[in-house]
Image 1 (cartoon, rainbow, N blue to C red):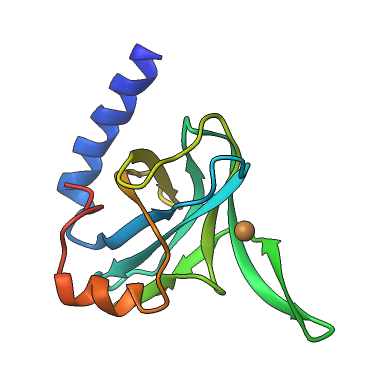
Image 2 (cartoon, helix red, strand yellow):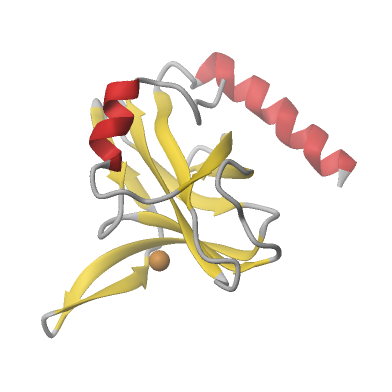
Length: 159
Ligand SMILES: [Cu+2]
């Protein structure tokens, strides 16, 4: 585990010089759920400020048995979650991971997550680079996205 951690850290430093200017994560958080809940989701804004399209191909976290990339689609009039192969990050755009849309699903929580706990999540991009995030656990509020915007870039930035 120590070695894995070291490798992740090293690759982040490597990606910071090459990539960090292009991919930035803002307003990232994990949704607080009741202690009995086995699943939750992570939401964020991913800014690709570069001129190359990228994709988020996987995510990982030690707090859950499995981490999947999900979206919502309407099936016979009902919104359902569906796993996706990757989340595209088009050049020069902001991709929103938000309730009712794209999100990172944490499945099989190994311990309850309390509000203000920090959850390490690493994102893997299509070029192999990793972005490690330390996400706060937050209660979901209807206007959380706008509030997050007002508060600026506080938590979850990968620096
Ligand atoms: Cu989901």
